Each structure stands twice: as structure tokens, then as C-alpha cells.
Length: 294
Image 1: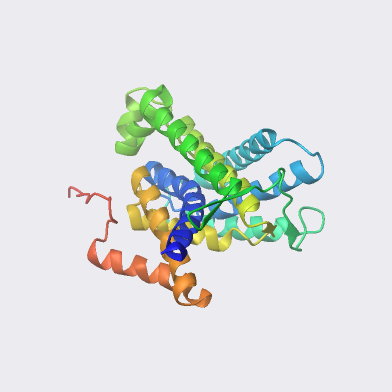
Image 2 (image 1 turned 90 degrees about the vertical axis):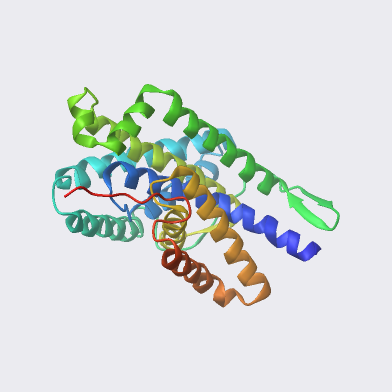
């Protein structure tokens, strides 16, 4: 029982990191109906910005979060402005191919020696790791930080979406982009803000991922990005609570598969779970069916 609870705690740690990435996927899809496959690589850039902030400049943890959040948000807004906005009225397949192209560009451009480099780097932890044992279950301050920061981000996101003017604009554009523009909503600004907000959360996730699993490289965003996208689809893409639920399910299923079966099954089990849910409920667990009028 103690082993199961320990693995459940590890699954929560992983699931909360996936949630921070999945929220970006689900918000962008909810606004512009685009699967931003470059989002996992923005998460990778956040980890590297945090790495240099700690390793080169010895910044405190709060400043490290600020550097990662600001850098990722600016990068995502630039990507949206340069790569996605010109294709907003183009067929969806064009934007999808562009997203894949941006993802590959970020991976291989940052792998240049003049940028981040192709090597693996040990991520330095900006604090001493402290462990506690309660009833045979080991807790660390890393897990406490991940839970606290994730909950704080969720509260801020909830406040922005439901209690601010720009959040009202986000919900309006998600419901009807054309009518929102006619009613005075600056659609381009709302979409750029959504990209930046989602990337800021990915930047937070990049810092937490580096602290929890202290090894980074320029291709590290591929699998967490795919799994976070899977989590968003699993929970119901376009739904913020669904992204959180799907991420927690993904984190638990991946951790339990590695603990009770084999680490080689962890990726396969996660994606098999997605297939099963989509066969049972194609819109995801919390997703809602949409009807198009002819």
C-alpha cells in the first residue's frame, strides 16, 4: 500500500507538470481551433532560459520563473504573429503543417552550438532538496513546490479568464470570432494574449520539469508536448478543467505502468488510454459535442 501511495504521489507530480503544458494547447485550440505543435518546444525554451538564469546569473527561484515566463510568452507571441496570423483564414491543414514546421525549426535551431547546443545538460537546482517521511511515504520540497506553483497558476488563470476584460474577450472569441470583432473585441490582440498566456504556463512547467527531472536538451519538449496534447484531448480539448483532469490521468497511468509493469510500457499505456477514451467518448471526458448548422 505504501508503494502504491508513493507512486500515486509521483504521478501527481508528473501530472501537474503535464497540466501546465496542456493548458496552453487547450486554450489556443479553444480560441483559434489550432493544434500548436510548437508548444512543447516553447516549454523546452523555458527550461533552457531557467537553466541559464540559474547557472550563469545565479538568480533566485522567483526571478528564474520570471525569466522563463517572460521569454516563453514573447516567443509564443512572435510565433503567432509571424507564422500563424497570416494563415488564419487559410485551410486548417496549412496552419497545422506550419505548426509542425515551427516545432522542427525550434528544435534544430536551438541545437546549434551558437544557441543552446545539442548536448544534455544537468539542470542545477536553486535550493537544497529536503525530504520528509510520513507513514513510509517520502515527500520532498520539490513536490511541494510543484503542487503549490501549479495551484497558484490555476487560480491566476481562473481569475484572468472569468474576472478580467481580456478573459471576457477570450471567451467571446472562443464562442464566435466574427461576432466578437463586430462587437468591438480586438480579436488579434486576444489571440496574441492567449498564445502568450499559454506559453507563460509552459515556461513555468519548463522550470518545474527541470527541477524535478534535472536533465535537459533541445529535444526534450517532444514527448512531454505530445503527452500534454494527449492529456488535453483526453480531458476534452478546449476545456480548461478537462486539460487538468486529462493531465492527472496521464501522469498516474504513466507512473503506475512504469511501477507495476515496465518502464518500456509507460508511453504505450498512456496512448492506449487515449484511444480507449476516444472510442468511448470522442469529445473527451469533459468535452461537449458541437453541432454545425448547414
